[in-house]
Image (tube, rainbow, N blue to C red):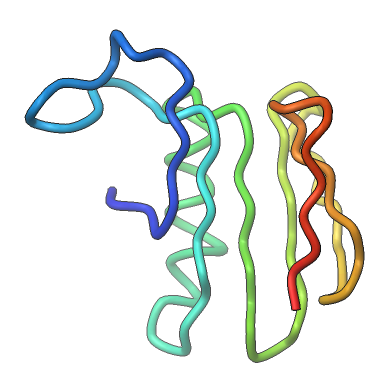
Amino acid sequence: MEPDISVICDPEKIDEKGCHGAPDWVIEIVSPSSKSIDYGRKQALYLLSGVREYWIVDPIQESAVIYRAAEDWISMFYRFGDSLKAGIYEDLEIVIE
């Protein structure tokens, strides 16, 4: 998988070839051609691979869905303009518009 945005907290996972192991945080930006993959196959693969946090940002629906391993992968729905807290960074809040 090649996520649209990934955050890797452990520098030991990164070398000149890329990331070895699961990123800590993955953000996918939905497009009409990727919608079923982002909400289905990728979500399952990220959960099984050890990703700690997965965001799906849908510009067409102006919404975001957040899944966190620490919260049993229960989906949390947000609208654009809401303040979204990153689970892996205590003080980080993002507003998607």
